[in-house]
Length: 152
Image 1 (cartoon, rainbow, N blue to C red):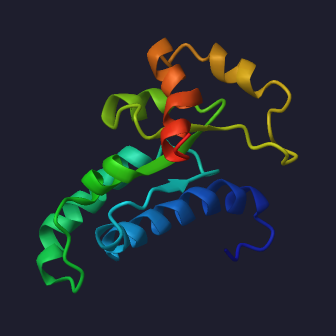
Image 2 (image 1 turned 30 degrees about the horizontal axis):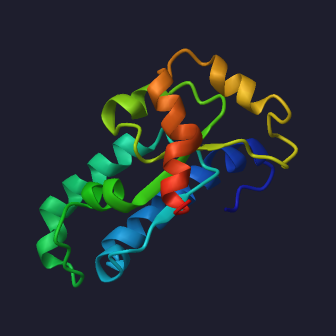
């Protein structure tokens, strides 16, 4: 992403925007349609963008999908909910909106270790201190969903 001199802008936008495009490409390009057992994780780019993006993909598919070469049997959001995961940053307080709109079945935790801007060694403490994440959702985000993603 070419923004010379704008490291903050690049760092803030490149990860979520690339994940949004990758998710859209995987679903709308028919990858998940062609490979029904494939599970995909979109990591290190927050999750707060997810509700809007799933809504937008569904809306656009309903309007333009009939003219696409790739034929899907379900809405983009249904493919996501059945086989995709996205990571929550440990301090991503907007996760409560994601939990309300999308649910907690497709979220896993990202500590961002060993990057210099990670919250290590306090990442789990920070996540567990966020009162916007109910206890049942914490369990799913910290273990259940990752175990399902990686077939553990």
